[in-house]
Length: 147
Image: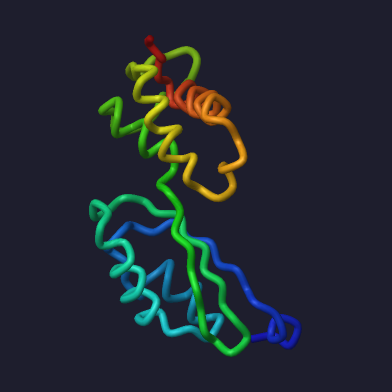
């Protein structure tokens, strides 16, 4: 570790599959460079995400302290994951706005918004605003929103 980084906590952001964390890349190199044993993190992460469906992408914020201890926060999966799952598509449109890959109902949009409202950075926003963000994401995937 460099001398400048030795005195303060470092933040590592990773998108990991729930219940499937292994010390191989990207986890091993990201934590190994900061002096943390990747296997310890993987055990704790897999235990904490055991209640989720295996393979669900989970954004994770790992805080590495100067004494090489760590703590982490898991967030809800990305909106695009929920939209793809709800509409039954594999990937988004190559040309969003010109091609439509599927449809999604307004009920699904609000259900996704309710799940995303539990994230810390979205708690202060009303449900309607979060739903508008979800609608914007669905348009960028090429989904048509139907009432």
